[in-house]
Length: 314
Image 1 (cartoon, one colour):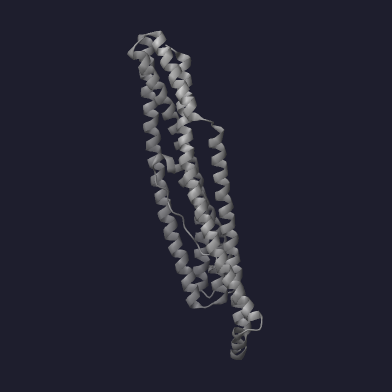
Image 2 (cartoon, helix red, strand yellow):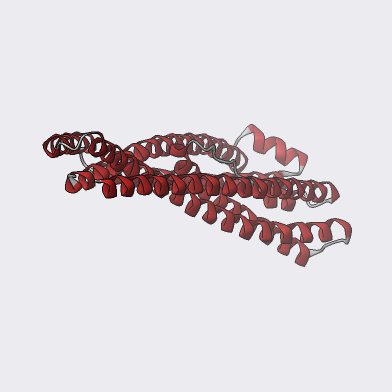
């Protein structure tokens, strides 16, 4: 029945499917890397503007003269420096995201290259199996075994793709739960600061929790980017992340009054709502992937059963 050629054909079909999957993932990764580069460039331009504002107030300039005459030079200089530092922090975060996105492109490209010329391998395996079928002279049954071998290879590759997407989904869900905990704590301290007078300790705790939340949601967004890449080749749409501005704490320090407290509390509440919706979307996505994997597993079982029938009949 040409079992050796069946095995070769199955392996070649699996490698071919993996190569196509990696090509799709690579395209998605390159798009993400381009977006991260654009983001970094925009934030770097903003940083240059903030640095120029600081220089105008620190040097001899009309801005400094006017601020001196009004008597608020120190306050304006402190505000400009805080905005510059916030912009620098945003650039550093964008740089890290860009480096991660570019490293993902390098990893996927290397993995795809390592598969070699899958089309030539597949063509050779197909030709070898065809020769084996003709030599055996067993007709339609042998030809169907070749089709089954191809189907098993493709389905096995799809099953692996789904498993990789599930792994990425679980990582994103775990990151979201950690971030949600930080956000809940930030919301609690913000409420205390707004309605109960707060004070220095409450401010410190609130700003610390806001910072923790921003960092945690940055990790969520990175996990979601990886998930989008894994989903790209199985026809499932990715999900968007939750952004918490790095400048929230800076704003609250510069304008520490009831209006800014209310604004920070409102921003935290909206971020919490978005995070809750993200939880739901990830749960729905988990169900979708589970259904897809079950369908592929059932298809593999059907192929194996038909192959066994053909072999026993021969």
